[in-house]
Image (cartoon, rainbow, N blue to C red; front, top):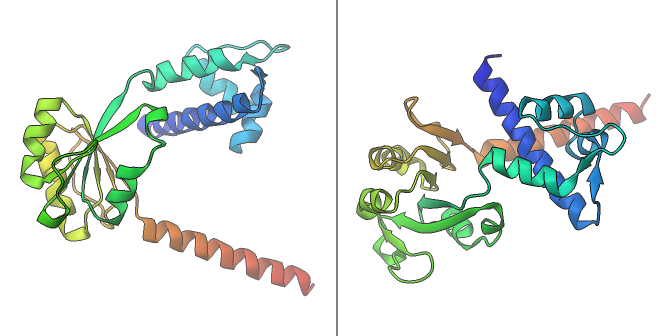
Length: 217
């Protein structure tokens, strides 16, 4: 496994720790131990301490970590002290659901515009306007947007990515059911909901068969 894979896995775990800490804080906890975090994210306490030590985060063996301080440190490491503005290409079902989701802002994310080629979907007014796709490059450049989401059908996804790249977008979350071609100058995270659901269905079926075999022994 290369260093980039290791770093990415570590960052994913840091986000998981932060989410677990927010849950524990909402339950009234003030301090937490590495064992608590490991249980919350399905890991082990040694990995938790190792991940924190990479970024200079230390706790007390007897007192653990102060949750508020730990959340603040993780937010600083993960860049969550800033508000990140994001654009979406694709105003269909997925794009609309993301546009209307109210939970992003508490995570430091704000959807600022949606772009679509369908004139009937375009709404140039409102809190999150739906604009013509040809306005994407100018809007991104003018507002210095670095993050984009692709929620188009498969046929339009590569064009959307190419436009984002030409506009200066640095990172993309792709919901289109196709793995997109991109150079090293842009980060693309592909999420295929169909495949993810098929994986869940397969694992459920496997578990069911295993339970059936167990009962017949």
